Length: 48
Image (cartoon, rainbow, N blue to C red):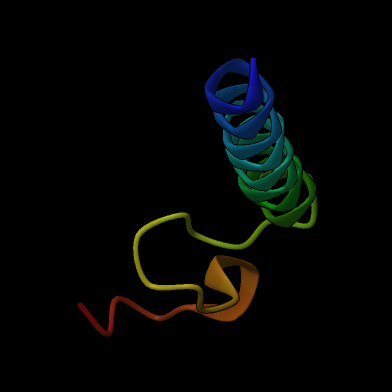
């Protein structure tokens, strides 16, 4: 039983971390930032 609870806790933590990363990516994209470099591409003059 302890193994199942431990696995469930680790799974829940991983799901929360992945959800937070995806949320951060969506927020950054809505703000016009690039998902690749994290720079503000609204003001980019072709630096890449």
